[in-house]
Image (cartoon, rainbow over all chains, first blue to last red; front, top):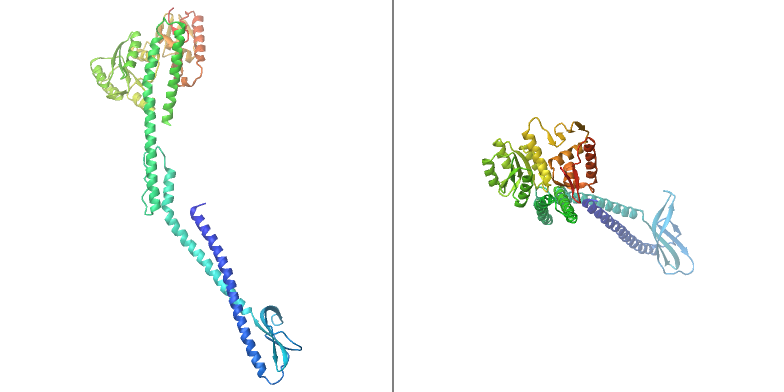
Length: 272
Length: 225
């Protein structure tokens, strides 16, 4: 995988992670804020309604709408307020709507009432959805834009590196020309190029020296070999040798042949 | 026959002179470029054995000078380098043959002989050893008046043996003459034995003498008893 793609992949993965975390927490925070606000509204409403009821002269009838429910109850009551969420089916739209409701009990003119106040949460949920949607949009746009900029700039930044890589690929040890990587204005790449230039130059020099040495060695070996062989060729013209001496001369020839063969292999190796 | 040996290695030059002297050639030795140049100015040679690498110059320059002088000498280049470039350059400049060090002295002798023969008898070229007559250019061999039917290798072997008559020849020298560089790749030189045996049989069957003698541990010798 290319470095650029890898960087972008990591970038996308981490930004998606952050984005999910961010949106989820934003959603909950928003929701909590809205719920708090609705609760405050319900409580101030309660005070207002209690005041109104106390001021009204007539007895209060049982009342039942979505937003307000008043019921006379007998006996005693707990002075307890209950805040909770509920769903109520409405005939108008034919669906359940989410509501926040507050139950409380109050005593007005020696009569006990149980009053329920409700506030629709539909608008609030729409708000949450809208805000969350907007956030998603902003996030996606940011990621795309950043990645594009990132990709462009990184490609420009890494260009010298890819050039260096290309030159290295084409480099051959026994070539006539040095590697000669250009100087660039990024410090790390400049250093890399310098190091590579020096390294390949040293390699080339060592290789040349080694080759020269083997060539010389193979070459210089040939003359002594030729002398040895010529002297042996002359020696065997003498007819007075015993069989044992001839056997020794044969051993000399064999050894000489082995050396010659070695020398020839060396010669061949140099030319490869 | 005058031969000039141009070789900077004194020992090797002496070996070559010694060997060629025994063949009846008169040899001069030059150990460097200058000496060699002096020699070719004064004398006229039939054959020149020339080492390319000389301490004070290149044998190829000397070769050029010889050709400028229209020298009739046959030239054999001897080089430690088996570089194809040198070989081609040398032969292009007009050298007749090329030998790579280390070579066998009988090989050198055979090449010298071949060059001199080519230069001397333009036309009637035949080599005679007692009842054996060889026509090198036509690749025909007669024993008395019977023509021998020889393979190419047997013919080459006979030419080599006659060219180096009365000389002890190692199996390696014979193998190298017959096969060239390929001889080094062989593990066994037994094929020499087969060729010798067949050649000997063919000559005797045609009424010739048995001239090939085996030398213990070394090789063979061709010649009168």
